[in-house]
Figure 1 (cartoon, rainbow, N blue to C red):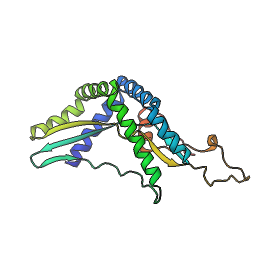
Figure 2 (figure 1 turned 180 degrees about the horizontal axis):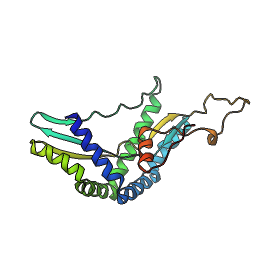
Figure 3 (figure 1 turned 90 degrees about the vertical axis):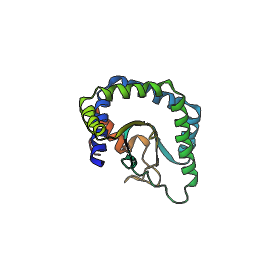
Figure 4 (figure 1 turned 45 degrees about the vertical axis):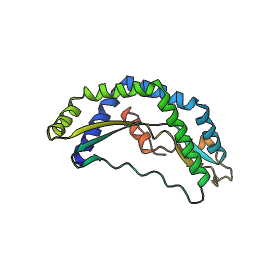
Length: 196
């Protein structure tokens, strides 16, 4: 079952990476989220608390298979652990995610993305081949667009760092940490990532 789900998710992601309308709608949604006053407020509070907020998000296609025994899905990657005693950061991060989710639910791009996903995946011969095998075996395929990974919050690398010459590094001097989803997105766009 795991192999079936992995193959379908990979085929679905592959078909979306080639769809320019998907990326245009996604960019429009990101602009709406970034411009939302609640989102901006939480980002400002996190930055004031010494955190860096990355608001790039790469949507994930989640495939579930319904069988007589129940619904099966691949496990989701574990979130980043939050250091003990960082309750305020945990609360602000959750409020940021909640504010982004509220914008997503209200956005016309949300339904537009759903339609694009259905059309792109439905036109993928590879996905359809795998899905029809599963359906012939009596399984129902459920497709979900996961937009939950909007922001990542990290401790500012400048905190406590000092250069060899005794100066604190400027923000421009610091490498930009990339998440796994950021790296996958850049790779899909055929952008090479050079190590620092």
